[in-house]
Image 1 (cartoon, helix red, strand yellow):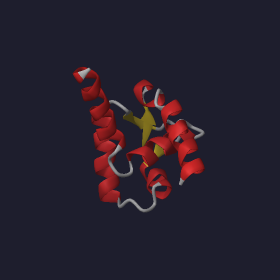
Image 2 (tube, one colour; image 1 turned 30 degrees about the horizontal axis):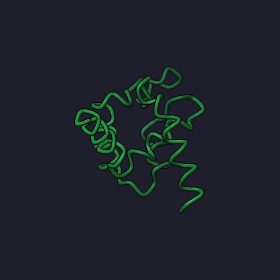
Image 3 (cartoon, helix red, strand yellow; image 1 turned 135 degrees about the vertical axis):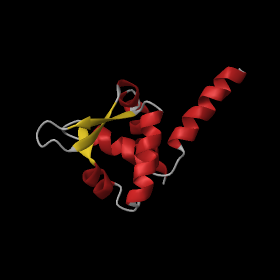
Image 4 (cartoon, helix red, strand yellow; image 1 turned 90 degrees about the vertical axis):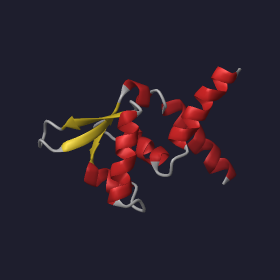
Length: 102
């Protein structure tokens, strides 16, 4: 039981950090599967660029996103990893719950 609580605590530590859920949602909604920093900044517009940079690094360290070089223009972008993509049902359920209850 204690091990399960530790895993749950770790998950909430990642998702509970301000902006992380919106960053993940933005990447899940991306048509290309990746977004440039400026696109993420516009998507999570109330987040400062400094904080966005910190959050992206945290998500990268957690194995949820990875930095990629976009072949179309050579710019740096961000893409969900397999681990990050596996959060789709969770993020969708949170969005559904929010729409119904908030």
